Amino acid sequence: FRDYTGLVLEGGEENDKVSAKVLMANYLNGIGAIGESLRFYADLTSVNPRFALMAASLSAKLRDVEQTKAFARKAEKYFSELVSVRAGNVDARLGLAQSLVFAGREEEAARLLNDGMRIEKNAKLSVGLGTVLLIWANRLAVEEPVTSLLKRMQILDTATRVSPQDIV
Image (cartoon, rainbow, N blue to C red; front, side):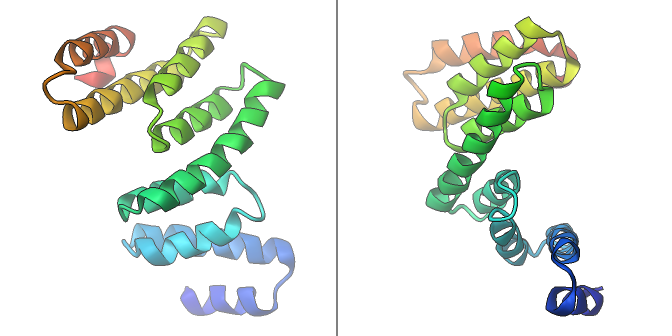
């Protein structure tokens, strides 16, 4: 597989090279070679900034906070433009919410998904919102374990109401 992909990367057409990079990045991620996979996704962000979301995810797995935030900003810009063109674009809204979470802005991500649910009731938005709320509550538990208790209880209560079957 690596030999074939390497051949395409060396001499193939540009579209074939992009496809080969995506395949290689996915393969490397699948076998747990996160750093190697990240190099491919980082390169792919120059071709299509939607890949910045996956690069942010991999950077987060490697615990590289600054790189995670840099990729999150790039993904945020891309998905923000898509949402501004079509507010009902569920996948773009979810991508933007993920970008915001990687940037440590869970409250903003929750509002964004709530706004999307006002436009259209959608199970993906509901699950996404529940997930964002759990991540937010977990972050508060780490950063402010004592002072955030009431806030975390409110967030978790909301999470069980918006996505009860997916939270428990």
